[in-house]
Length: 249
Length: 202
Image 1 (cartoon, helix red, strand yellow):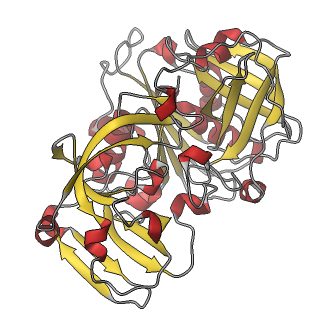
Image 2: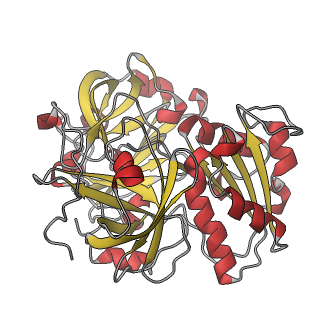
């Protein structure tokens, strides 16, 4: 589907903003309507292009946050103070405004509902976005594949999609979620703030013997650390997919 | 579809002074971001080997000691990643592909680079010859770190950086072009940053 759409080249499409949601102090979700969107796999991304009045333009890639649903495309953007594109997407654009996009892109870091094996998702910060698309795609498709998410963030208020994740963890649909905090913890939290380590991995992820497909997304040092921990815990490197989700300004 | 760009009301952007060195759609970074699809393989030098395979199936292999005994060059160059960052004036040391191809009989037009971990990427042979590409083992005067592709990576700086395969362990010469890892997944067969050849059809 997505691959076939790419064969003929990728055109810029004129989308428009249907809705904006503030997720955290710095992350915003934009819900776009993109007529004739070809559909996407969970985990794919797209390019956004902004053009100034004199024709100067700047583009960036963003992960798609929703499961494919017709012409609806959701992006979650982390605003960077000195960024070129993200501040405009976070604060400058309004409901009804046009936005040019091109995609979907990337066919590697994807989860498809036909996959039946257990899935371990590991997110650092805004690296949760493509993993959220996988969680939503699983729910929408009625998949029963066991899913686990280990989500490491700076502090509780930096968790993106917090309410939805809590709800999905509690609805008995087969997703287990562990939050981990690196700087600040909620009162009474069982673990001190710390970076992910072997002990947390043992406690909060699907064991290697169950041969889960692992998807790791976050900033580079986080991805390096998590992928190395998975390999050390006996996971086959062939079943670990990584995506750096560096800040893109 | 959208032939004319749509104006983003109120968008100004950051114009960069070094724009003449910057291919279209790129921005300058001073970091060295890492992009990889799999965990970083750790390759002990005593197990490292590089194999050149011709289109007839003839092979030449260098172990680390033999490889490092080849003449190396220092290269200062700009690099451009398809994810839109460009980094200027990066310093590398490596063995020119010309040295590895010296005396090899081949009519091949293309090469497939192979890496530890299974990554592949295709490059026309002409883009690897005549001082345009290296097997690099040092960055900024230090041994190349595993996350940046060490012990050794391909360096083809005039193409998007996914062509500069990390953890390189071989080149296979081919008469016909074939897609590598990202090229099968929607990325451009050639990848010229100045023509903005990011994806299929660009």
